[in-house]
Length: 68
Image (cartoon, rainbow, N blue to C red; front, side):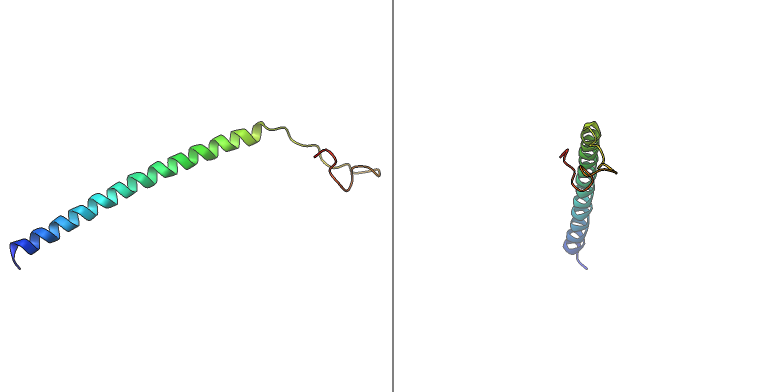
């Protein structure tokens, strides 16, 4: 094996390692961003008023939710 081949192999390995590290950082940033958005959406959904349930007796409100 000549020195050029070894240097090329080492350079390629280092470049791949650096690329993998960058991808891991980007994946972690994306994961944190999605977690933050999910948390915000959960807070937004919990702040909405809950709709009343359908009536359980009588002829009005037992089949169709007329509140909607």
